[in-house]
Length: 287
Image 1 (tube, rainbow, N blue to C red):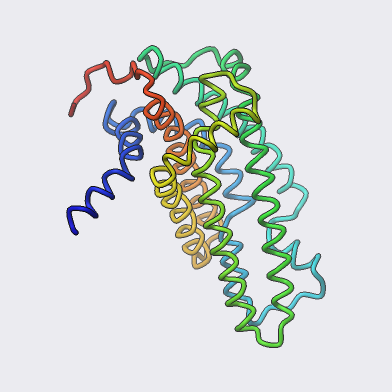
Image 2 (cartoon, rainbow, N blue to C red):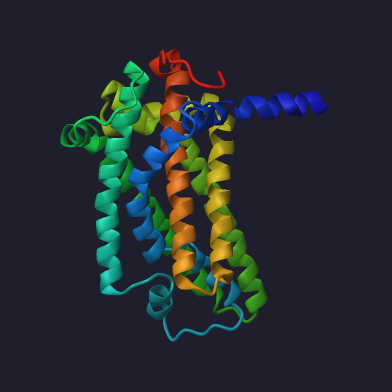
């Protein structure tokens, strides 16, 4: 039984292990550091203006908090100042540029075995629409999930028993996290499918979703780790009394998860499609 569990664990973690090898083992962590730097600026903005600890704040204040209207509760659920919205808009643009450029770096590295920085504008132009499609899709999903969660949380806050309302809110939040994990795992190969094969957005999405059925456990477990890591930092951010430390914690976990997730999608695509990885042709310390 123990051997069976070990084999199951090894099988499900295979692609994640190869991704971590790509980022940390080969090149002694230089790859991770370089890619992480491209994601850090946008994650600093998101960590400052939209920390996930806000959801934990809602849960801990659920039994005693009072709001005169749904709009007041909605505005309290995130930083709604005009400068925060401007910051998030800037973060969206930076996210598009960073995903586009990092996709070009990884694709070039896998194809020719050379970790280099291609011409920025040409690389962004080649990968802009795939990055925009993925970014816009997950932004829309996050907005809908946020809207539904806040709406139901406010509704359950009107129940006579606040304890029952809190339980319902926590259960629904867990369902949202599971749903986001499944969605992330089901679209793992969406971005690299567009980058490598040049397929259009919706066709690539359909292909990625269809192929993910054969690798669901391999994709779901790493996605679960990513969601769990963000959740842990959200809880830690709630108990942190210093706002800028909370923002830094969120920025760090956002940027690390984003770096690993993007690299995971490309490594997974190449491994599942049996694409020859020229980056493995080089000799690295530890191989």
